[in-house]
Structures are given as structure tokens and as C-alpha cells.
Length: 295
Image 1 (cartoon, one colour):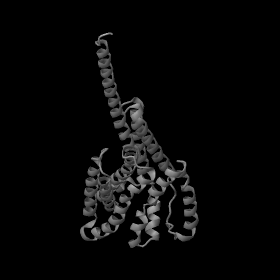
Image 2: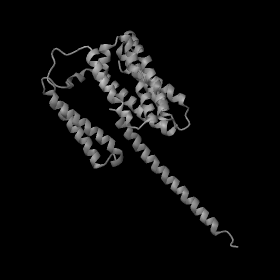
Image 3: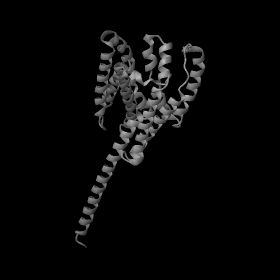
Image 4: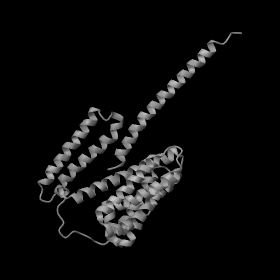
């Protein structure tokens, strides 16, 4: 995502960036492939896209090398990747093993230790991969937090709504991809609006407005159930994208695990209740037959 956005900002003029960022081809193409071909094609389609991007990027993307480029902080990168890998693995496995399972707790403890080691190592480097001291700047810290919340919410919404639209509402993969398009449309409307708002009310209030719109959209999505009409989700997705675009002046793992935990607990209760009802009906049926007069 960072490298993609940096290229778009460098190549496209300001008035065209919203279109370049917001074109919703991926969701629709992915849905079409899943509906008509083997599920693996949704991944294989990226191969010609990547090859095309490398070839055309070589000739079309202008050079933007840092004249004072520094050495890559390999140790810092290794520590951060290790911490992130353990965190994702622990979160994904937690619903099955249990959130209070010793392995899960050990995983979170290892993440905390690795994160502390990363911070300490970076503070001692002349050219760190990430100078953690920059987060003393309140504007940077709050902006980074807003971006993290927005990214997690967006990925969670796309991941969970895909399950909802297909398995609850009964839409096909292609229809599901089409019904996620309002989010991208919201981005296309919200991106140019954010530039206008920043000029009028400043970055702080623009991000605040975006977060409020995002919160309202999430509240709208939280009320979805089996009988909810699609337009409720569609309108919420549009404002979700609009709020996200203004907020943008790790995600599936966390919310997927939360969904998995809730689903597991609720399905267990439902099965127990169904078994109890079935046993009671069976007992009543046996009792009724035993009381019938024999002929």
C-alpha cells in the first residue's frame, strides 16, 4: 500500500488521484473469477498484473531516488517482521486454542518482548529503520492511530461483509463484489472533498470529520441481520469509503478471529439448544406412543 500510493502521488496529478485510488476493479474481477473459474485464479490473476506493472513501470514511472539514501536496517527489519509474524499467528490461532491458553499468552508475551527489543535497538541506531522518537509529535501519533483504525476497519468490513453477503444474504461471488463497490465510490467522492476540507478547516478537523463519518457507517453496518435490505449496507459502505478517504489525509486477522470466536460460541449454544429441543420432542413422542391403547 505505501509504495502503491507513493507511485500514484508521483505519477498522477492531484485532480486524478482519487480516480486512480478508487477504481473498484479488484473486487468485481475477483468475484467474477470465483464465480466462473477455479478459486485459485483469484490469486493467479495477480501474476500478469505484477508482470505488466513491472514492465510498464520501468518505462512510465519516473525515477524518484533519494540522493542521500542510507543503508537498510536489516536487524531492525528482522525484529519487526518477527514480532508481526508472531502477532498475526497468535491472533489467528487464538480462537481455536483459546485466548487464555498458555500458548496464546506466550505468543503475546513474545510479541511484547520483541517489540520492546525493536524500540530499544532503533533508539541506539544512527540511521534506524523507524525513528520511534518521531511519535512524540502528537499530530503524527494521532494521525497514525487514525490511519491504523481506518485500515483495520476497512479490511474488517470487506472481509466480514463478504461472508455476510454470500452466506447470509445468498449472493454469488460476482454479485458480492459488485455490492462492495459503494465503498470505492465513497473513496472517489471523499478524496477530493478531503483536499477541500483541509484547505478550509485544517487537517485536524478534517480527520475528525472523517472518523465521525466512519463511526456512523460502522454503526450502520453493525445492525445487519438476515432480513436487512441491501441498501442499508450499500449506503453504509458509501459513507464508510467517504469517511475513510478523509481519514487517510493490521486488520483481517484481528476481526476475523473475533468473528471466529463469536461464531464458535454462538453455534455451540445453538446446537445445544437444538439438541435439547430435539430430545424433549423425542421424549414427548415416546411418551405419547406409550400411552396409546393397544388394539
